[in-house]
Image (tube, rainbow, N blue to C red; front, side, top):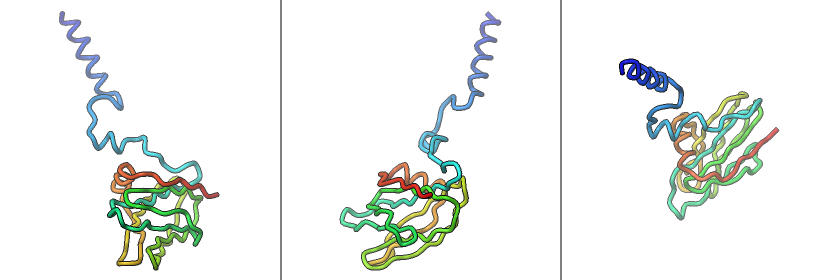
Length: 147
């Protein structure tokens, strides 16, 4: 009986040490290791928009003044970019705000697109945790790869 009990305890302790085993918190399930990161030699830039009123206009996004797409409330897009500086803009109904970023191969960045005043929009840096949370909650509107 003691040998059986010892074997059971040993099996349980080995199982508890295995990665991915045991109980996981809701946060671990939502932000686990399966979050898509940058492709080889590229950077991943996620542009997200939080919840917005139903009648709020979409926020247009450009890269080097070339339209990329637009973000309605609770949505996101991903840009796969080679290392370089980029001129990104968020457009409101009449004005735009520029954000110049430089990306490095292998990195993942998060930007928040939000209204600024009555007729402008802006892009702000987001933390990794906050960016991933908004991506998980939102609807994807596109993935764009540039070489």
